[in-house]
Image (cartoon, rainbow, N blue to C red):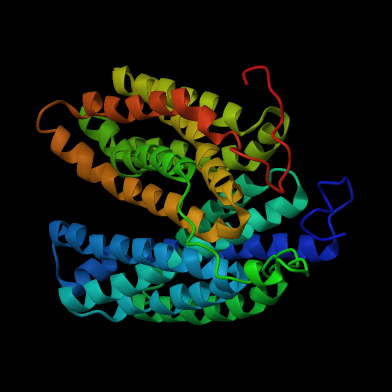
Length: 414
């Protein structure tokens, strides 16, 4: 019995599969930690290079462009060589290049550093999600959301360590060099525990053997994958709005003190992390469609409450509900995309992840110009509308055809 079907048939997961799951957790935590260490040091690097917030905003586009390119390149590579090999390359590259922004001394060198860091991040992101899809397929039950929760935990650890090293007066170049070395070593240690590429069924012998040996036609991306990518774009744009505008909403619209305003993002991010730790059990009981439909609905209610409330406590409750609602949605898109066609799992995940990442970057770019026409809290009704659209489109997560994954639980809402 293969590792990819053991759990589906009721057998407990093998030691090999449990090891792969643990190593995939490490990969997600490493990605969150490395990128979190870069984020913590943004103010110090901005000061070192001598640039304004506006210039930094433009330079961050290089980070996004590099990530998008890395996702698209490594998605197809993961299908060809296996996600384990790409996790090795992506993890080592993402870790090594985090050192570069710390030694940049001009806008141009910082742009090049962010392009390289973004590329490594994109490679690691899509390869670890592809490996997670393979691990989940082996378990035969939902485990994807917990991986994304551990990514958030990695960011929290980075914030704590980065705050301490900054308080000690360490230069960003020193801290990020240590992170680079540690990240490469961790990558080398975790990769052997990941699952190898899934073996295809042997071709039958006989008169048709020569015909079957002919090159397979080029695979086209299924329309369901593009639809999942659109949903990922909309809901990750919503997540980007919370990351970039939640604190400013409380501070500028509700005149909350800076310390109180910071609780808006704190409530959102905490709810996202906790929600992802419990989402897998909800998916196992009710299904992916249920999680996205009611999660996006709760997110719409939460953001509408935050937008309309004239009171800070209600606004904080709204941002927290927004985080709980969104927490379990994105992992379901990755799982669904990876299972549309297991032979093209990496490429399909890269499409959805890439479109979602563009949405994350588009959040500030879309809301900012809207605030010139309407107040900030009114501009939030665009992401509210995106959440409502996800509620109406959640049925797209139903499998288009049978795949070797856990059966979709039947729920009352299906």
